[in-house]
Amino acid sequence: MKMLIEQCNEMKLKGEVVCGQDFEDIRTLSDEAEVNPVIGQKIKNLWTDPGIVATWNRRAEFQIIESVKYYFNDLDRIMRDDYAATQQDMLYARVRTSGIVEERYQIDGATFVMYDVGGQRNERKKWIHCFEDVTAVIFVAALSEYDQSLYEDASTNRMIEAITLFDEIVNNKFFLNSAMILFLNKKDLFQDKIKKVDPKTVEVFKDFPGGIGDYELGVQYFLGKFMEMNRQPEKEIYHHVTCATDSQNVQVVFNACKDIILKQNIKGSGFM
Image (tube, rainbow, N blue to C red; front, side):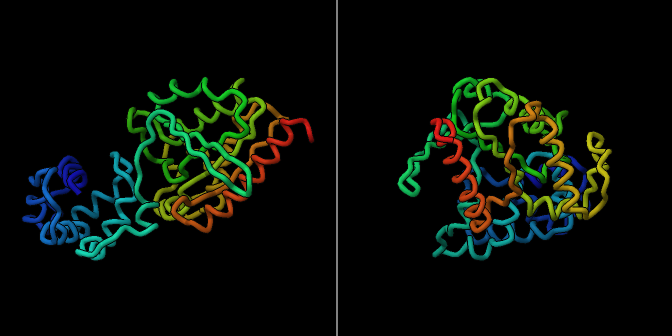
């Protein structure tokens, strides 16, 4: 909320703020302060305040994690004394990956080793050369970020950066024999955003053939941007449109990826 308050001031939207005292109380609140019911109520008041709503609607102009909306919308439950985080609460929590994180899974008698790596520019040099001969690469890009800029470079569009990185990965010599799986993630946020923000209004996507609300066309448009990066006609790119907070959607996609990885592993062993 303090980030929204700061941006509200910078965007000169404070004149639209109704809850002025709550605005000042949270603005001056220490970062170490315990969030009690009184503070929780002030945050709740501000979340629906016209000035903060106007700021949130312009969130593409600054850096803020989209999932805060989930928590702000459920403050009454979260502020209860007996609050315990649900699985959904944990799914919406987000921490930037730094370095290389290894996870091992036993699935149907097979061991899967997954490496989660940071996608930020300063993270790539740590891992790009480490994964020669991996069975598969899962590349995750957010559909909803077509009008947003990078955290580390405000002059670069996030979607363009993702497409550029995908180009580097899909055509990299280290991954020539690896299955390539593309996740176009955050389809729920994309479906909501495209009702309000026409991709054509973003300079780098002015060739978008659709308009406001064209969800399916939007998915195909951005999918095409990624697919055309592949300069190896014989290399198949598997793709899925996903919502990481939808456990049923993730389960279906995970099962499909498991089959692709097992098939690729058998192929690499010379049995196919």
